[in-house]
Image (tube, rainbow, N blue to C red; front, side, top):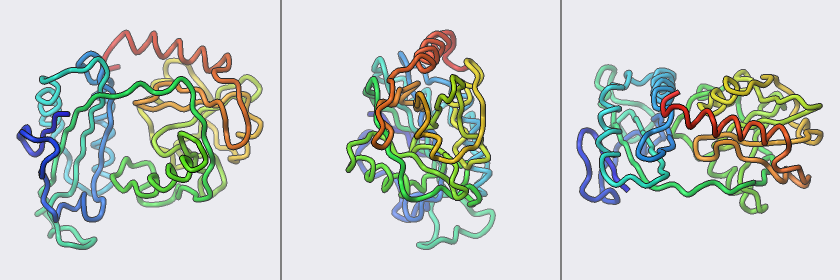
Length: 276
């Protein structure tokens, strides 16, 4: 693991690095991005940085210096480069009072952290369960990649207790939304579908790339559509296109024919450019 915090590489990436009053620590006031690193190169860095800027704006944080982020990424990756790695960029409101309020307007001193580590390959298939708690598609954080992740932690623990590798949320309207760290695609009557951004799901980088490279219908349907889906798969930075073999108590073809085509297209297009 290598870590960079506010301009400097850390000698001990596991050691103390942030103020105990950092708003990202005390109240989860921050945004982040997680990227795959292949042969020392971050994948789709520009798209991730664009989303980091959108999330920061949605949180009311000052715009991150994206050139500085790129320099930090390069510095972190200049060290040991495993064949497959993960890069996390975290941008918080910085030190603030011990409560929800930030420092006075204009006095926000953001914290920027970049960490790189090895990444284990995702399993060939996974299982998912739907959770009883809805996403709030009308909430202030809808669609933002915020560090406020406790809801995802609880949902993923719920899934793990039931032997599943991912949890899927419906939204307040009862429509299928997303996973804790993934976007969901499914096939009905041979048609590839995925929830629209209006569902409150994250505008996933992998989601956008697959829609560009392969296609698919963005639509919002009751979460019960999973009961009739012929195929289900997840997409994310660390999963790529991962078939779902079981959804709740229902077994599925994994991979089915459409999923297999998506995997092939993904592998071919990903190999063409590191920053599509």
